[in-house]
Amino acid sequence: MPGRVDDMLDQLRSAGRRVTAQRRAVLQALARLGCAQDVEAIHARARRIHPRVGLVTVYRTLEALVGEGVAQRVVLGDDRTRYELGQEHGHHHHLVCLSCGSVQRLDECHLESKRAGRRHGFTVTAHRLELLGYCAKCGVPA
Image (cartoon, rainbow, N blue to C red):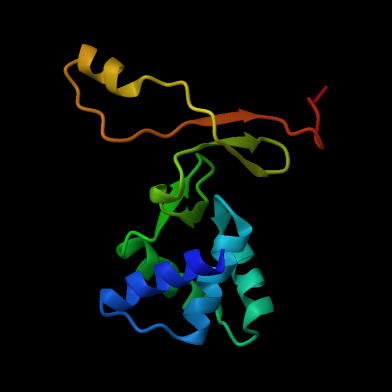
């Protein structure tokens, strides 16, 4: 992971962005947390790395990361914006628990979205899939 974070920091520098200790902490937090994390979780993890990271800095850093293609926004239908490293870090989907809100990464993808799009005269450039249900901890409600 350290090499990957350093590569992303180099990408920010190449784009003319300053790389501060706080920005480094936000990027490290995002890399350690994994996919589809909300700002509060990223902020809490970043503060463990650099205690003076403020919430506004996290928001601004995430916007800079998205702007440079290092990270992407993920909206899973619950009106909460989450963030994860960009698609170059692996195409995947999400399992979303309707009870506790946990999100798990799903690496399997059996969609033939480009072929389906062509059948309808549509050029598919990307797709997202969220499977909604209940995690093992929550179980199926009665």
